[in-house]
Length: 401
Image (tube, rainbow, N blue to C red; front, side):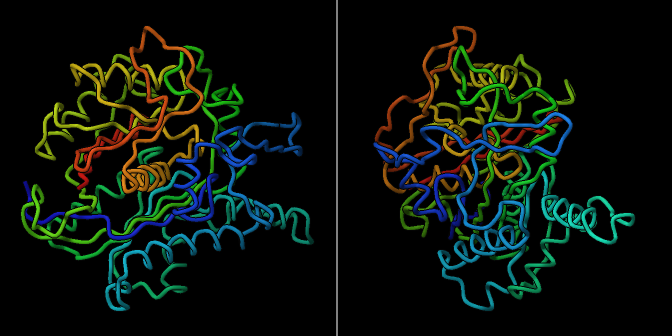
């Protein structure tokens, strides 16, 4: 194993559960969620300016601003980044020179949609141009201007594995000694393109997201922005006295691309088993060493089928499994960071989170996610799965304690 590893030094999050990481984790673990909690039921979002109006379930962030406003977008984006940096307690020089990694499916398409609609309704309607500002580097440029970042930057757009791949890339650069600190951001905020696109694919056919349930009938989208600051730590990360006690170490990971389908990995689980095994090898651990699993768990038929088949190919006996999308929806390219921040927050409180909404075991999957929140061990190795469109598969191994 590499002598130099990346540890999670700071976290930030805004999602349907709460405006910041602490509030989100508290609601994740609450025995009795507040009445407006998405744990009880997602919101509804309506798009009525199409020939066929759309009304669909959606896990949105509660804000006073209109959800399509650029001001809302940048306020959420900047507040989460600042939360992670403050949590990491980096000084001004460390902050300004750290590397930036961004992973998303839609980037700032929501802002582009808003500007296009403004132009269509204004005097320049004939010159209105779709997606006038969208670009992978646009948001990094905004952070440079607003917050003074001067380090190298990298953008990832690999569907639902985007921010997980961004985290993996950042940890590789830290291990190689290229940078001492890295900021990894995953975000997916309101935009009509994603909502109508998934609706058109007929993947949103249920009001509730039920991963691995026999009666699962599709996913529910959500929005969220998460940020993680990674910092380098030197020495063997397997024992006490190394400066990693109680911390989260990015022990290893892997990604692959399965060309079985445009929209899903091979449902027989071969490609998913391959990426999990590659991640275990990279981390220097065996399947028997895994304490628990954070599943991708989208609640769609083929995705759950492929993930369950892959897990059962790797593990003779499955460790406890949690799926977090029933809490915040599927946040697409942001789920890598969003779900890691939530799960890590639960572990810091000594708990493995349950999976709400599960009712009936599917014999074809042979997976029953946790139905109650249970104590977590003091130390452990955790598997995090993220699988996206185009067969973009990523697995991470994170050690805690």
